[in-house]
Length: 61
Image 1 (cartoon, rainbow, N blue to C red):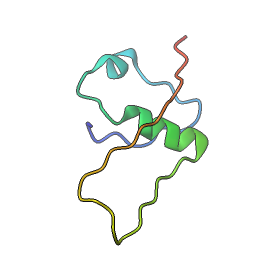
Image 2: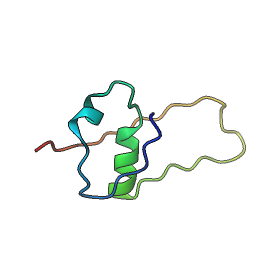
Image 3: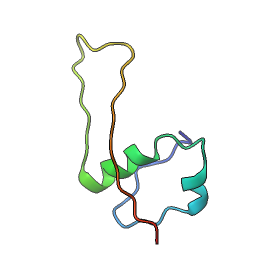
Image 4: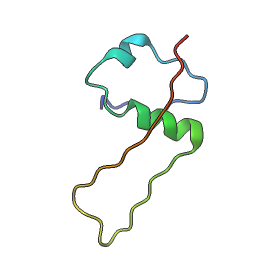
């Protein structure tokens, strides 16, 4: 990502940011702020590399 902080509910995100292919964590940051989403992994037995999926709906007006 580009060091984006989680957005607040109702915050406007510019179209340029949404279209930037380098922005890879926008959906996770947005979902975290809007739905209080949090992913916790145990300190032990967690693989060094893992992948999670998250579905987020963004309304563009």
